[in-house]
Length: 613
Image 1 (cartoon, one colour):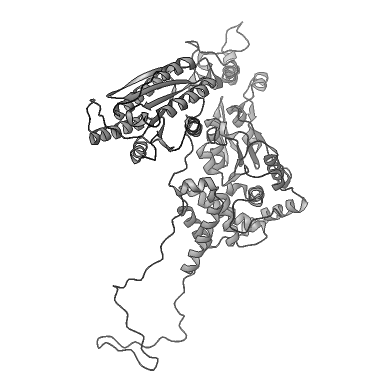
Image 2 (cartoon, helix red, strand yellow; image 1 turned 90 degrees about the vertical axis):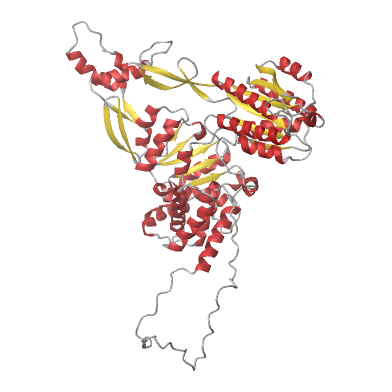
């Protein structure tokens, strides 16, 4: 069979490729696999293994990222309906894949409506279709393999869909020599495991240990614990056993819990004896009777025929050791970089659907990528969707012809049949640089900040994004460069930027928030990058006072956070400044401390944070 990694080690090829066999053993219980990997021979080998181990006749259709809702769900067969004069249904991909596994390509680009329909099929195993004059209850018992090619540059797949996929596998670190090739014996073992899965049990202590490991790793969804139990059950069936053991649970922890971890498990301190508690009297010698109270009634000794009190089924020490093993196995499977971020307390979050290098998605009536249709009257430049209009009118042709006047057209269309094209276009991103040009920053880092902004301006120019620059120094903030795509104009504005004076940090944040709001109202996506040491000493009124200025700066940061959007705080002091970290916390921003950075390092850090948002 596919080799399993028994030791608590990082996710190996054996685990990654065994996930394909586990999914085929229990597709209904596991739901599917979130397969993180770029397109290449390793991913192709995984999919080939899945197809080779699948039972004969199991459908494995591929769902393109651009698949329409009609292709997914089915609906009215327009040509057959017009020919027959009555509604003729056409099966969708989910119905055709009943009892099989849907391979969703480029899941990170899947439309939200398609992800919602997949979630419905995974939850209910059926679809209720009510559209185009049809009402059908269709079976859709499917599992899903979501191919995630985002690699930190695009938004991740739908969180709701990913939560329903029990196994999360990352093939990015594997090479072609790590791949596994199927043979006839492996396929036979998978078939035998599917046949005997119903009689495999998972002991209560393993279930409790998996639930405890789920909580310790900060996994919020209860589906994860259930998927871990089903994974351990499938692993036991794959080994030909009737009862799952600790090795099966450890494999489940690596495949199900480790990729979902959001925090570093905290080791519990061993219990300490309370010296203040009253001491119990020592046991009397065996040849002496214990002292008897005068008021205590005489009770006969227990009979030998009576059953002794029942012992607990689970030894607490053994249960704790099992939990520790599962947690250690899951932690060992977490990538090193992610483990470091978890140790520092940074919670892993997927980017919102509006984030991205090209800006947020916005609905449009006439421009952008077609994303379906909606009912409506074509006005204001909106274009008619002819196929969907005919599809809406087709079921009623026989009834309308019966009441039509002589000489009526062959197809009768009414205004309530009209469907309009829907489009989606990307809004441009405007990066707003707020530079601290005060004396404390100008002494060390203003030159590096200017150089970093110039490098980032060139990158934004290539992407056709807009940039804006504002500076705060002395008693107020001013906009040096309004939003523009002109690289020459931006460099000219930065060249004459002076430094020195106080730090009106609150005024600078207020100006950045106002500019971001103006960009958002104009239909753009703002990204605010603040380069400062965080040491405010001038208030909004232009007067000095470090304590009051610091409080006003934190208030302005909280207002910027309430506005929403992406914010990056770069600490430009010589060594990390607590005030800058507190400012980033108040603004809900990403904090970057770069005490030894030059202009290129600053630019790379901002660009990396910008790409990961």
